[in-house]
Length: 270
Ligand SMILES: Nc1ncnc2c1ncn2[C@@H]1O[C@H](COP(=O)(O)OP(=O)(O)O)[C@@H](O)[C@H]1O
Ligand SMILES: [Mg+2]
Image (cartoon, rainbow, N blue to C red; front, side, top):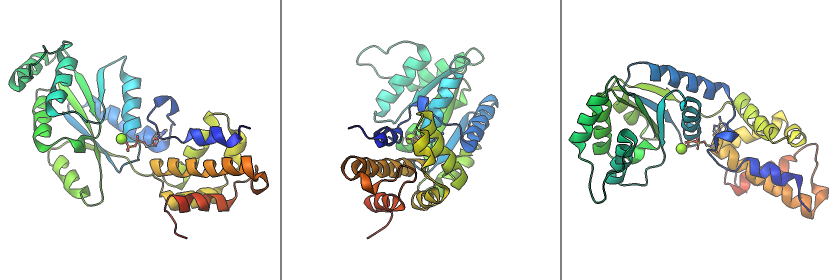
């Protein structure tokens, strides 16, 4: 038997697939801010926020939305070395592959970019930029100084590095756009819209305001945490639905199940 909760569970698998993008006030605002910043003669723009606040999906959304009007590229998590990074950049800029066993000559790349000025404007969306070292970031900055490549740099905000990172970037007069965790209202919209998008009306209705209060108190409105909690919650529902349907109420998710999911993920302790 397939439980109705299986589909609901899968709605909350963590992904940056833009087909699953939800318009939220804050993401719309950040989108507009970014777009506006991109029109300014800024060289670098910083997209800042804690892990799970929606930076990657927003960058993907921007690329998707603007790709017909602009030369825009998304660079995902840098697992690559500096050498590979510059090879990739070389390809994007020159539309050519670098001959085998050669490395990018950085000053030649800079000259190449200077020559592009006024002819092309390339936008690079650089995700997870906290992974790049200082030296790399300095080179990226030099490239942006040519004004033919604009970087949107996405950076994780961590508890202690917060201010240092922010100050470092602000002192370079970049524009800073910050993504935050959802407030209660936004989290409600997020959860409901996610479910409604997959036509799971009944299930969306079975999650009441006081349930979302509890979910919000566990996850603090973080989208990734929210996904994890919702997934786990529906996984438990699915189990009961299949094995002990008496413990499930289709009209209202039992609070106990939300608590069990919270317990399993370590938000509360037994
Ligand atoms: N506006 C949104 N629409 C749909 N899903 C979102 C939205 N914002 C965040 N999410 C979801 O939350 C999770 C975390 O988002 P992500 O972009 O990976 O965060 P970050 O890159 O800041 O760590 C992903 O599963 C993503 O799909
Ligand atoms: Mg990310």
